[in-house]
Amino acid sequence: MTMEFDETFFELQRKRLLTQKTRIMNYIQNDDMNDLRAESDQMSEEGDVAQSHIDQQYGIQMREREVYKLREIEHALNKIQNGSYGFCEESGDPIESGRLKSKPWARYCLAVAEDFERHRGVG
Image (cartoon, rainbow, N blue to C red; front, side):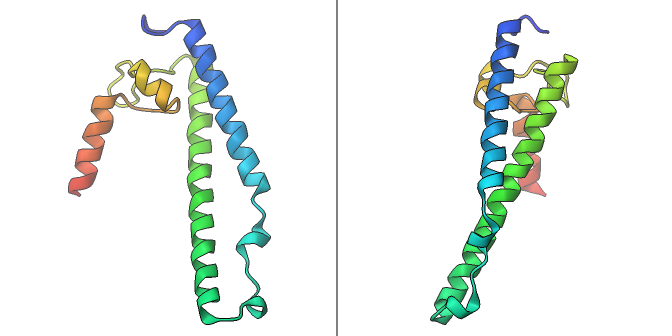
């Protein structure tokens, strides 16, 4: 635990992560695959088929993002449990509390995250 964080902060973050986890799990469970599958015989025009395909792709991308975020949330919850939450996985420095408040599953401090973004944009 760093001087920036106390048990109250960790408990609040844990609750926020669990709330996000529940929201995502509900989204995934309630996402009816039948909504993504349009029956070709119900489509009256070629444009309907094309729009259906676009809608399917969008739905798949949304689910993939939510599953990724769910994994990140699980990782953050494990870090709270093992005492490593709040520390940058790259530098070992504390992650800014404002960053953790806005993105409680953040793995990296702002400086490292910005550095990753700069290098990703180059390559």
